[in-house]
Structures are given as structure tokens and as C-alpha cells.
Amino acid sequence: MSIHLSQPEWGAILVGLSIACYLLGRLPTISSIMVFLGIVLIGLNGWLITHLAALLGIVARVVGPFVAGLLGVGAGAVAAAAVAVIYFVMLHDWHPKHSAKKRTYHLSWVAAIIAVAFLVPVATLIHGIASGTGVA
Image (cartoon, rainbow, N blue to C red; front, side, top):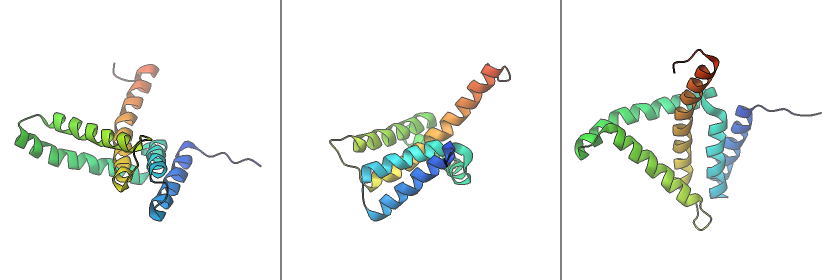
């Protein structure tokens, strides 16, 4: 007897294990890595991930222009800076000389959703170009 799980199913297992670790307060670095990898494996297949990506898009469209107006820069620069800070703090906390905190777990959720929301359209575009149906 063998069990064959699909990529989104492995992602769901990782997310479930990470939630259990988080709620028990154990293995904070591993739980934040598991949730990041789990969400990336699930991709936009799941209803929750799709809607969280849409919610992040709405927040970016609302907050981005406001902060951009305050700072006098473009909204794209504000979004890029926010993403850079999120990934920097997350990777800093994952480093062996540092320890992950609760913020790392939450930032891992956000960073994975951002990665999935960005990478899925890029992969679709690349597939379309490779198959001759996309726009070059």
C-alpha cells in the first residue's frame, strides 16, 4: 500500500503542522518555515490563499497611495519597501544565530502569500509563451 499525495496536500499537511506547533509554542523557527513552504506548495489552489492574496492586494491599493502621498514617492516604491522589510525580518529571524518569534510566524504567512500571488501569474505567462498562446 502506498500513499500518493499531491503538492497542495503536502502543503496542507505542512500548514496544519505549523499551526499545531504555533499553538503549542514549540519550534518557532521550524513552524514559520513550514507555514511558508506549505502556502507556497498550496499555491492559489485553495480558496483561503486566493482570498488572502486578494485581501493583501486591497490593503496595498488603499495604504500604498496614502503612504506614498505622505512620503512623496510612488506607490510601487512603498510596496517594494514593505515587501523587502517583510522578507528581511523573516530571513533574519530564520538565521541560526537568531530565533524566530511570533512575528516571524505571521510574516511567513504574509511573505508566502505575496510570493504565491506574484509567482503564479509569472508561471502562467511563461507557460503561455512556451506553448505559443501567451503574449511575448
